[in-house]
Length: 206
Ligand code: GRF
Image (cartoon, helix red, strand yellow):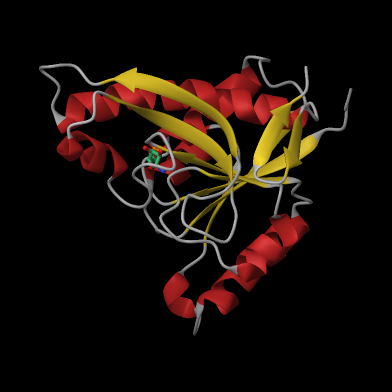
């Protein structure tokens, strides 16, 4: 049993509904061993920043345009992560590919949520890719981040059937409901020390 308290940082770019799900699950006691200490956005007016402030969480905008390259931008983020003694980084709708500056420090401690059943439909507009492909089942994936785009070791997946009368929007919204369940569950398992990365597989120890 791992009873260490973990400070979480959440990287966002947009509306922040997954951030909200994490905050809610911490506040209602489902994730007892962690707190969201910091939210970092690469978009100035992202609604996720608003949500953070509503819960008294520090929210910092780091402007990519202020840095010559990704390494400079990520070094600034890294400085904040160290300052806040962050033990786990969550990518919750963060629209950038993470580079070596962050990954070298947080590999195995950085988790992403993706709205498709990986390895199918990585990258942008995953729900639309799945819908346009005509698949009968889609879903969502929580995974550790590695050097690739949505390629890291998978922690949890949830299937969502594609219904005959679905549109991209209705499918995306049913997938989102499941994202809000499996992302907090993955964080709970991580915080309890229940996730072992073995090669490209994640073993959940109960
Ligand atoms: C989610 O669908 C997530 O899977 C994807 O980006 C979207 C972010 O939504 N990576 P939100 O900002 O958490 O509401």
